[in-house]
Amino acid sequence: QVQLVESGGGLVQAGGSLRLSCVASGNIFGVNAMGWYRQAPWKQRELVANITKGGDTNYADSVKGRFTIAGDIAKNTVYLQMNNLKPEDTAVYYCTADLLYSPYPYWGQGTQVTVSS
Image 1: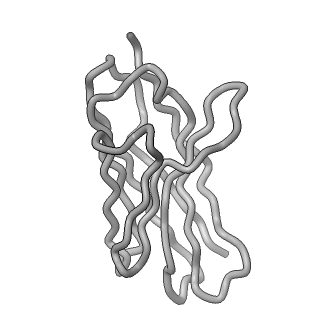
Image 2: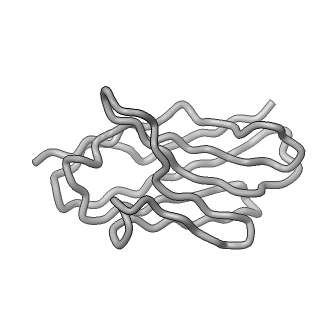
C-alpha cells in the first residue's frame, strides 16, 4: 500500500506565501513523477505543477512566476513554494505521484489553502 501525506496548507493574506510538502511512503519501487493539483469549490480539479524524476517541470499558466515545484525524488518528497498568493488560488491542494510499476497515480487526501483579500 502507498500513502501520500500533504502538509503546509493554511490561511494567508493575498500577497503572502505558503510552502506545501508531500511525502510518499509504502511499497514504492521508484517514482516517475510527482505533482500538485487543486480543486476550488464548484470547479474541476486542475494541474498546478509537476516534476519528473529527471527534473523536468510543468506549470499551469495561472501560477507561472509565482509557484515553484521542487522534488527530492530519492526521498519520495515534493514541495510547492507558493508566493504572491491570490484569492483565486484558494482551493484544496492534492499531491499526486506516478510510481514505477503502478498502472495508476496515487493521490493524497488534500490540504486546504485559503487566501484572503
